[in-house]
Length: 71
Image 1 (tube, rainbow, N blue to C red):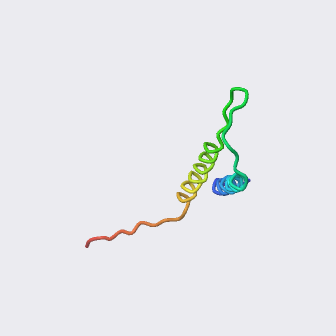
Image 2: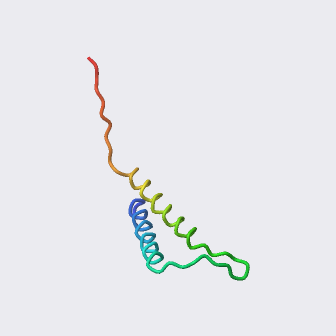
Image 3: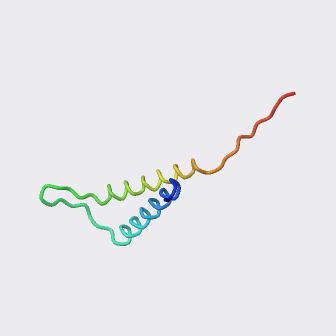
């Protein structure tokens, strides 16, 4: 079973693929049967998903604290 960081990397990769597909053939915002389809809004949500994954993955990175001791 994949760990959390692998799942986040998969989500990020899949979202980037969706972004690639959408930006390769952009579509206009439209309304049909009373429903509005906003590709611009969808694109923004996908970009926020990538940013969210990046932030979560950055939190998984090893880090160290630099400290000094007084004697």
